[in-house]
Length: 121
Length: 107
Image (cartoon, rainbow over all chains, first blue to last red; front, top):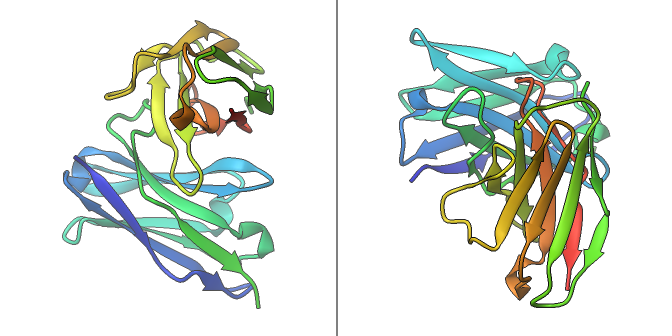
């Protein structure tokens, strides 16, 4: 049974970089498609981006609205994947979830518990 | 971009009664539609995929129907533990998956 756990700072200053990590257990990180999804009261659930392993490399796909500020990476040795969002503003305040899909064209059947990230000085 | 519209925003149903939640897509998503249940303080949980297939471990009182642009989630006999927000999600055009705004189900 795959389990996910987010970690990272809960408070980030405006204009700085938000960095989160998701630890994967109970399954191979190379066998799934891993996404970050965020949730705000005003906009609901918003897909941020995903990463997956193909030909031994991490391949990424990002939301067009965040692509210019976003980077995702994967560390197979640690069974973790990460998110880095640059130049954050208050609009990036949200609960961030990591989630997994067993197939490229399938919804999210594994979710972390979520981590609240607040952007504030 | 496909827009997903859920209705109603809030639904109040008595225990044992049927609850019917709707989700409409601004263009066809075929059967690439999922429903999630989110209880307070928890992550969403996959209920239905392929518009009508229950995910593993989901009780039979949950059923999904529809295709194209109109979809329905039905809870046949509402239990107290079903109080939650229900989200629909289209995954027709990965990676641009879109969620609806959610329906809050109350007893």
